[in-house]
Amino acid sequence: MDRLEIKKGIYFVGAVDWDVRSFHGYSTNRGATYNAYLIVDEKIALIDTVKAPFAEELLRRVREIVDPAKVDYLVSNHVEMDHSGAIPQVMEAMPNAVIVTSAPSGLKGLKAHYGDKYQYMGVKAGDSLKLGSRSLNFVATPMLHWPDNMVTYCPEEKLLFSNDAFGQHFSSNLHFDDQVDLAVVLQEAKKYYANILMPYGVQTQKALQIVKGLELDMIAPSHGVIWRSHIQDIMAAYDEFSNGETNEEAVVVYDSMWHSTEKMARAILEGFTRAGVSAKLFDLKVNHISDIMTDVLKAKYIAVGSPTLNNNMMPTVASFLCYMKGLAPKKRKFLAFGSYGWGGQSIPQIRESLQGMGFEEIMEPVKLTYIPTEEQLLYIEEKIAENMG
Image 1: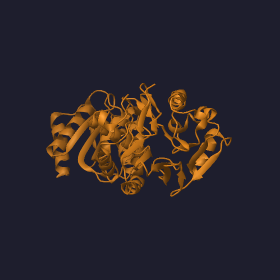
Image 2: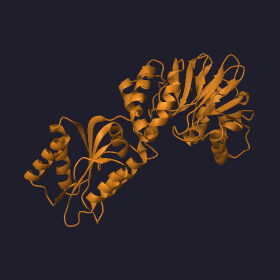
Image 3: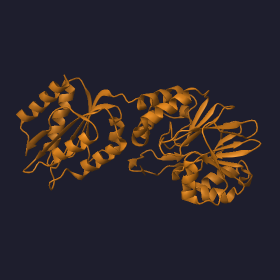
Image 4: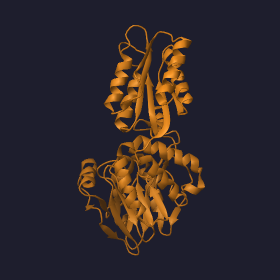
């Protein structure tokens, strides 16, 4: 296997998952990586493991460098199983290793997953572990995105093992930011933030302030590429993602049975265009909700439409609203719309859902029976433009 030394005596020993296409309900069309790192010093430390099916790949990489039985510490920055899933297999090969994790949440989580048969060391913010010529400093980052999360900083190398922060679901046989298309990686970083970290903008801002105070030559996240040439780019992007501000952008999201709600969605899009608002149209039959959320991340306006099906909104629309609610965007304005034949219950259901998220209404919901006329569609355009003015 290719042996990748990211700094002298520090190695990438993770795994590339080329085939994964779904992660907690969000589409991973470019695959994923589960990054782990081995530090060889007077004491040897493994930073994180990988998803369980890739345990042997990690161990093969480690064996190319050292005998796994000589590893002294396994630092678990995060309990979630794409990070910790290989712990049982890894600990069989590293029986002398002490598992270092956050206290109390990391200890609680790892013991719940894997029992208390291992030797654990709980650490808190400000704690440090000496390896020899290098040391590891631990910084708690609770709720980024679980209570146990922490990051690990090696000051002698100016290297931050950043856990989920600054990550992307992006598979590549090349592991550095300057070896791949930066625009693609930044887009994947935005999608990752939008679908995993969006609810935790306040916590992200706090963590950024800590990270900005560190000397950094490299950021090594748990997923995606390692940042060495574009650290300022990803830091600036995270600042923008998490600052709570929105842009003059709109997303129009809908499903339609016989194109009537679709026609209304297109008229609403034209209304935003008339008002000079950048807008995107998403048909839920062909767009994945996680891709839509990537644009919702900074969009100020959200229009959601559905026809009425059996006294309810379309299941695709209900799914989108449920997913968006969990990601908890703030400071948004909304419009509910849809066509119907004789019930029309879908539109007030959408309205109630969006109001429940704390969004402010742009204007009264737009409800039309059966097939919209050209006059009605023009009226929608004009009303949207008017309410944007």
